[in-house]
Length: 301
Image (cartoon, rainbow, N blue to C red; front, side, top):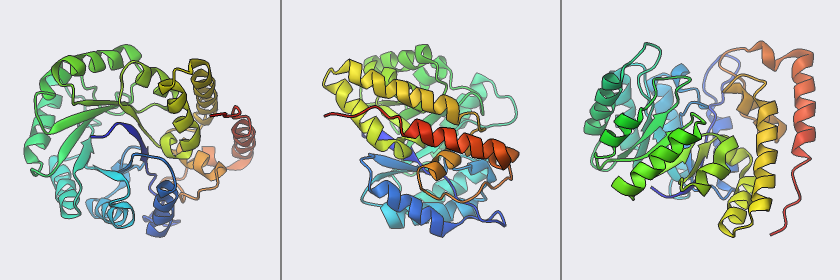
């Protein structure tokens, strides 16, 4: 799996709660004009829990048709039931995906053994042409413990992990372990606010919706870091962090849909109607967001 930045696509919905493939295609085309390494389909920001397996299939098909061969694509295969995960794997295989990501079973509590057994099931169910990316998102699903990580990276078709915990001590442990035990393994942060420390400590990059929305700033941040221009990199990270602290006043994942709208990309409406995206509060939030976007530090290569 290549290092770099991967943009997580939002799933646009229409007024009836159906997937809007026209808007999804527009979103994909926008991302093709960025310096992203790849794209993630049907991740958390893509609201996979709201998608039927047929809707997920339609998104995977459209992404491969529009962006296949231009960006590295990651298929979201998460599901509430193992049968749903299998259906998503079959869809990803049908359209030629070579990378897939799944979070641990969610909603009901799971112990470490259950999480490990689940990932063993997924690993064994993948076709030979496909590799798996683990997903640590402890505010939505059971965590991938360090002990489980050590055991799971022994499986050759598990090639990476996205860590959305924001816990840098945990993240650095994963990097150190993989550097020793599996140097080809990729460790990505899923938090825009930690891209600088994550890459500075040896991480592989970023997988998030912010990666495509803030592509120019993030690419410059990484260039400054790799050139040893740490003050310039820190300025951009501080700007991203300040922006996201404000953006996160709207609940995840709709905060990213609202940010995309401020940046001029229509990603449809939420599948669920959220009061935080209506009325005077939202208008004030939008105005503040636009002012913050105008305050991006001057970038000089």
